[in-house]
Length: 388
Ligand code: ADP
Ligand code: MG
Image (cartoon, rainbow, N blue to C red):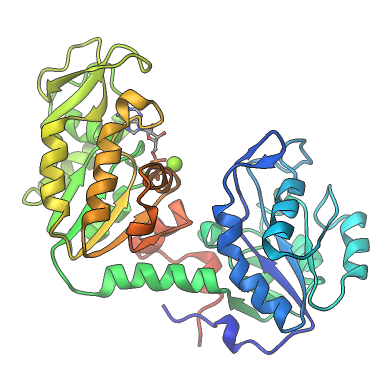
């Protein structure tokens, strides 16, 4: 997809940047600054050319009101450390009096971070008046929040009607990585899918499975497929609303669709489990990970891949006894020499936990956005950046 790029933008005096600084916080500190780091290149490029840069982001789900614990003050501090320069900040409403006062003081080459855009209910309503208030901060708009380009919000969509709009470096990089994955014809192309919800992933399976040689399924997603096949899954998490879809997909792609042959089951989510053949799950047990034979089989399919996309952990990986399958897949993906892309917050966290995040080709910062992009859907935050 060809986007109007930041490099092609005229050097502007004032720039409004939409970034995705939705990072996990703990005790008023940033616990993981990956997303802040990912936004630095665009911000530095703009300050270096002498623009006054106003950055906006959401954080969590404050549901349209100022909420303690979801303010961006810790993000402003961390951003300032990483930039090695002061970052102006005013807590409260993102376009409130405090922010406007800071904006008036903002000099060329300086940065102002607005507080949580979702403190204002008009953000998620794609409200043109709120977009107008944001647009006043810049002469041009730079979209760099790939994680939210699938949302039509005031700061990702309505604002594009008001300012000349360009794709920042992160958005360009994400789109290039996903395009490369979908368009470069090398095979085998292997799809590894896990996680919880089938409804989020159907589109990607439908779109990519026809190009893939292997579709390896794990996590709670696999439970839905097993159930659809009539295999008893006990008390396992599954999506009963997705059974018909699961049957349809397995029929359509029966030659490449692979489900676990053995699993780790337990009575409680905290108790270490036992390994069982997939058809031996008791009615009071839950499937919480893929078993050793499945890990081995998936590894054998992953290693020769020329292209690979992985979304969704293979089990309840947050609990140590059920993290093995996910960590094993992460290591296999790291050893694969093909072009490997990880999408999804939990999958990215798992790859980092396995210590192999620097050994995959690309880790996308956007879960839902990367899935919808690969589905080929029209994303409102990108459609308005397409070069004409
Ligand atoms: P991603 O963020 O990578 O897109 P998802 O959000 O779809 O992934 O799914 C991640 C969640 O799915 C994790 O919280 C994980 O614990 C859960 N999960 C995966 N497999 C199972 C399972 N067998 N039982 C219960 N939860 C599971
Ligand atoms: Mg998730």
